[in-house]
Length: 253
Image (cartoon, rainbow, N blue to C red; front, side):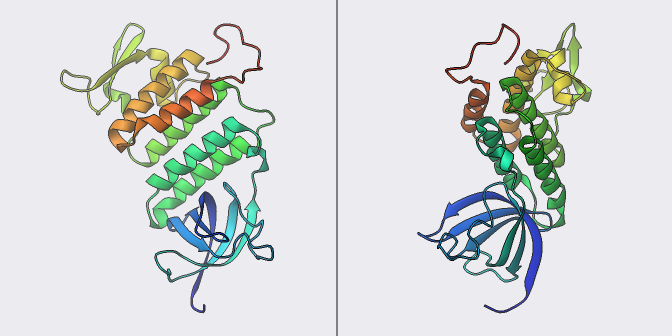
């Protein structure tokens, strides 16, 4: 195939089979958003693409400017950031998959995707560069921070300016505005409200759990995403391996 080509960088956010030897790879790119690409012959022994990409890699890509059958076709792919630290750590890998899915869904086409590319790239780097595997509390806190950043980029960040304080509790309208009668209102501890707003320096495990529950209801309402997959992820991140010793009460989520 001949013709005009485009050079960009992309994060591999999805890889699925197209045939026995080919893949459909979706890349999150800074200039075009989510770009689905047909990588033909990707797993053939002598393929030029073999080993050049994997899930969560950031790669350099040269692809043809005209799609073929609704998919773009690459001319060259090479790895720039492999993020090997994500391999073998199930909490980090689960978080990376969730973040990639959310960013791929919400990132707009065109130049507006650049901020999403930076958000996801920075989040994946933070997971891959950790010196040790995450604890349940650390993984839920990381999830909360990514969702807060994603909702802010989408223009949907919870507005706590109208939140009503009552002692150690805060009432927040999930559908926005002041927490008045007729609105969907969540009553959460003040510490959880600070975790939602991003003003808590070191939120407690209990506050993070409450903030995670609030964000679950908020995301389901505003993004119309089915909550079951997110609930399964939260349960997975909160779990401990069967062989792990139980931490003292209050030490972890």
